[in-house]
Length: 57
Length: 376
Image (cartoon, rainbow over all chains, first blue to last red; front, side, top):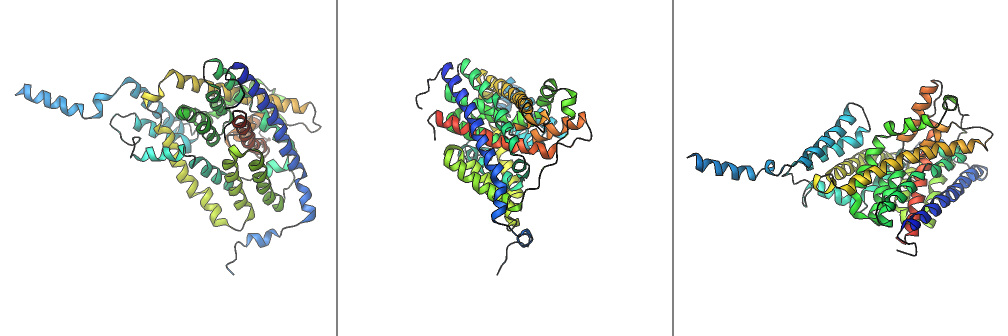
């Protein structure tokens, strides 16, 4: 365990930090997702060849 | 003659379970039968409730050795306790899940954080009624509505609370079609529930392949305490999206997931014996779990409404409650409520976005919680 006190104040502090940080981090994931389509400009995948499955050759 | 037979009969009876049968056993058997009833008659998550309910009935029959060391349920529980089962569940879920709706509408991922206020309400309440901070954190995670994640975090923070926490988490997940709708209706107008959504863009195969790799890297980098679960989720999803290993995908999301579900549900049900389960602490945890689910549902809807203040293309606030992680139950509830308000409204694909974001939201909350408490 670290410095957070094991009392109600500690519980409130943990909750505020966790809830706030969750929004920040999930917004970061949102940003990554927002930028993800950019990858389509640099590379394309031939979906039909993938659908043929794993080759034994 | 009778005086010789009676003691023999008494001795014989004392060797059966009947002589150890308590009112608590009877109550737990009734609870187990109710779970099976809800699963079979009401169709509330039969994949979960039949196994949990049946095992609950069996372990409350005195004399049953299934949950004792050496019994099959005991080893099923060991798999859960050693954190082998939860990541395998996530592997199967990943193999079955299309993350397209989440990738296609990034702004809705915010709902995956917004719908988790219940975690913190339950955490603070648990602390107020005398649980330690670590125990309170584990109890709060019930509100993430993510069974494997609740088990995982509980094993790290308060392993002795695993039985009531896992039972509360899975029972409430199964009962979400009962818990969520009244809160969703209370916080929305009919006009809001009728709102349609714009069609989502097509997500390319390349994006779907890059996504699990990217997320696995980010989660292992920033949230190592919860990385095993999300890593397996992403592995399952990568297998699915590459399209070249269909056999593995079929196994991970089919037979393997079925076996693991059997192991998980019987393991959870087997912890529900009257002696350890019928305590004030267990009842408090079950109560706090319900509060967490209710607040999570409400905060998700409110977050969606707050987002609508800033968005040009408004979103149906019913999507907010789908930000609770339970996939796909919460998304299905949002869809059904929207459909009831407007039969032209098919919200399921849109609701899957926040619902999947909720999985990450719970993992993030759990990861931060473990980090703040100094647990790895």
